[in-house]
Image (cartoon, rainbow, N blue to C red):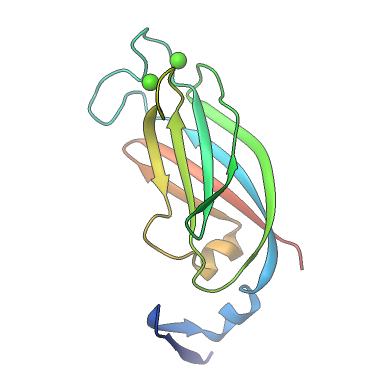
Length: 147
Ligand SMILES: [Ca+2]
Ligand SMILES: [Ca+2]
């Protein structure tokens, strides 16, 4: 297997396996997604002041822009959304999943931010998912290559 060094002014240099070339630049169906929410907020308090379970919803960011926001799932520690968009994913693309507990006022309580500060990796696309475990919560976004 040959390694190649790809450089750009914006991203700097990175060493990639040649197999990466088969993953990037293709269209993917991106599905949001799944969440297993921790029993409590990171600071140890209950998610909601009425003692009920959280009400998770998710936002998908691609290259810094929100392209999809799911519905709330009421009073549940698990969520399986089926919202889907199609996007071409190029090398260096940023894909983030932000999961929130919907509350009556404001954005609600943050459950997890997944994929922030890093670009999507070839092995994540090949595996078909980006999964993060943060503060006891597990969140996932799924990928299916279309062409
Ligand atoms: Ca809450
Ligand atoms: Ca609730």
